[in-house]
Structure formats: structure tokens, C-alpha cells
Length: 301
Image 1 (cartoon, rainbow, N blue to C red):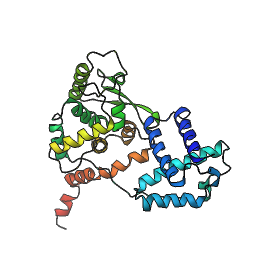
Image 2 (image 1 turned 90 degrees about the vertical axis):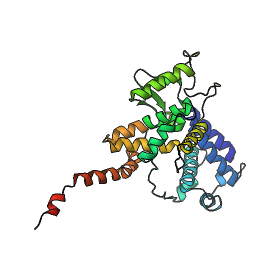
Image 3 (image 1 turned 180 degrees about the vertical axis):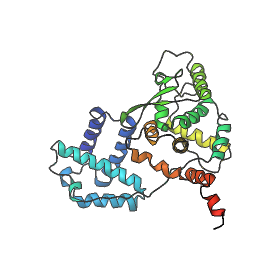
Image 4 (image 1 turned 135 degrees about the horizontal axis):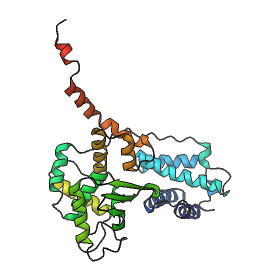
């Protein structure tokens, strides 16, 4: 079997049998296209050696200059395809079985907005219209991903209860809540205005511009970056930064990390734990305010 044929079959399996989300399928398609370009679309799978897999890894890092996280994802997708081919008895053994690949990712703390920047952004969020204003409010209120926001349908929103149904990574469904009454009213008003003629069509995208075009993830990113500039923020503002900010604020307010894990849609709590490092500064400030040993240190021996 040729590489291109195997890649197409694996993508069909992921879409039809594993029921992975369109975003995941598109990411896998990019990953496998990179390998096809490197090894050759017509290359026979059985002839691919462990040394060539190592060479591919080195090419991604040194020649292409890709980030470690991207290299790791490319190889994880490729490893999954070869493992699937072995299970289907297309191959006797995967080339990954004979090599040890470990890609260490640099420890990076999530980028969050400081309180002052967050206040300025919220003050300016209506500068470019109701669409981007609501997008910012929902991202901060729920911590959802920008792709999840773009995929929201009118039927996924219960404005009375402030409940949103989200379909996240791997098509996993979860529920998030908008508890702020002002944001809930803004959401209700937006739907009544933007979807006033099609209220019965629950499959319409929630975020749509005045011409009836759905807001894609790319358009939401661009709008949020523009609002950041309009607010005079020095940093480039991204939707994922708002997600990080939402998670950090919840933890610093004392919310149980398991609730934050569920809100964000993390499969493992280890992913959520990165935010505990960010909230250490709140812990330090709380300890300083308490000044537990202050009176004792000031007392004379």
C-alpha cells in the first residue's frame, strides 16, 4: 500500500468510525500531508524504515524549523496511523516499534491578561460591533476555545438558564454556563436581533455578521486582536489568552480545579494544573496580606 492511499484510508477511519471532530481531521490531514511531501506519496509503506522516521523528525525540527509542540503532533499522528495499519494487518510491524522518540516540550506558563488590561479590553469591546463584543464576553465567561465558539449554533444556547452546549475536541460534549445577568441579557438581545427572522432555525451559527455570514475562528481571532489594539494594549491579544485568563481567574477565586477542568473540557486534570502555577502570585499576595509572622518578627526577644 502506498503512503497516500494509507493516509486517505486512515482519515476516513478517523472521521467515520472514531467520529473525530472536523478540526481534528483537518489537523491530521495537515500532519499526514507533511509526511507525504517528505517521504513521497507513492512510497510503499512496508519499505519505510525506522531510520527514515528519525530523519523525518530531524527534518521537521532542523530544516522546517517547526516548534517542538508541532513536531510532536506530526509524529503522534503518524504513529497512530502506523499502529492502525498494524491492527488492520496491512503491516506486520510499525517503524515506530523499533525506535524511541521523545520530544520534550519547553515548560511554558499560560499567557493571561493583567487586571488593568482586562478592564481596558472590556471597556473597548463594543468598538467594532456586537459580534466581536459578544465573542469576547463569552470567551471570558466560559473559557471555551475559539473553534468551539465559532461552531456554536442557536439551538445550543439556552438564554433563560444561561446554558451553552459545547462540542469540544474529539466531539466530546459538555455544558458551560453564563452566570452574569448582563452577559446573558446581551446574549439574548443578540439572538433576537441577529436571528429575528430565523428563530426557528436552531442550526444557524450563533455568531453571524450583519450580512448573514458566519464568523469563522480566523475572523474572531482577527477581531479580538483589533480590539486589543483599539484598547491600547501593548500585547497581541488572542482568544486562547482569554481562555487562559478565564481559567486563572476561576482558580484564583477559589474554584475547585476539578470544576475548572470540566469547564475547559480537559480530558486530564494534568492539563488544567498548568494554571495553578499562574495563580501562585495570588497565593503569594494572600500570604503577604495575612502577615502571619509579622507580629512575632517585630517583637523583641
